[in-house]
Length: 385
Image (cartoon, rainbow, N blue to C red):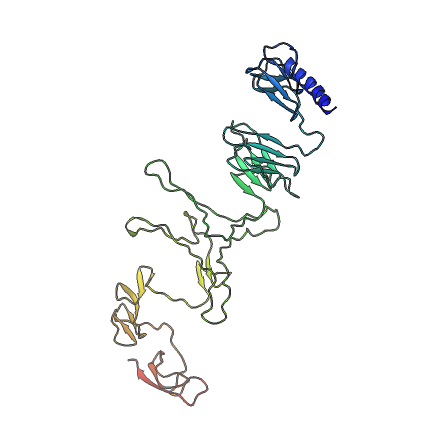
């Protein structure tokens, strides 16, 4: 009975294939004593049915389904359904060197490309190219709650993550996390192809406030922060991650500048160190340790003995226009100006030893004093003639 059923199936299938073979009319089905059948000759144009294994072997030059002019080994003009009974019937297409160029794993409802053991709904082991013809064919991957988890806008050559109308080459609606498996970089790679051209800029900026006719709103802040230091049961304690900002390397040590509070054309904003509300172009709330000189309107506040306005020695002596002060205050000049005169001075006025004041008649010097509230201080005077 089983042989008869197989033979009947073969009769139907072979009849269908035979009727659509290229340049071959409907032919008789030949059977052997084992129940195997074939149509055509024993050469290259044969369709063979193996009754033992229930398999069909097509050696025809081209086979068409729904067409009498097949353009390939198998040419199907119409819909095709495999495994409609939802059985455990896998489907495989082999390539020239890949036995599992396409593998449909019916038991696990998975498709493998380049693998017999797909681990996901679609498992691709190898290179994948979409839209090789450069057509306007968008590509979208939907998430559990995000309809545009990944959106490729082919018409505008843009990619959106979380958006379906990306405005730039890559637009992300959400946070970006670079995993901590290694050091990471964000940079502009390479250099212009034109000879003698400057390098490309990289701009990072926070968002602008929404426009409002009445109320004003601040723009978004830009935060640069190092990582947190962790652990350490005893000193020395670990530091948090440092933040480095520096210019690019140049020829002959002409390294790039770090420019703050300036947009390249005009002054913009203020810099606060230790404060969130700087009142000047630079506002430092805390101690300032300078390891080199400070230039003030063309003159230096320095400690290296070169081109001074004010020079401070390591011992605390101050020279004004003098790089080798011999006293606590050494001025290379012939004038000292005390602009405001005092009044009501007596020989016992409050004061501190060494203070000098003047009034219309005298120059006063405090020879002994500890300030207000201390025992009577002593002043001596010299008349102005």
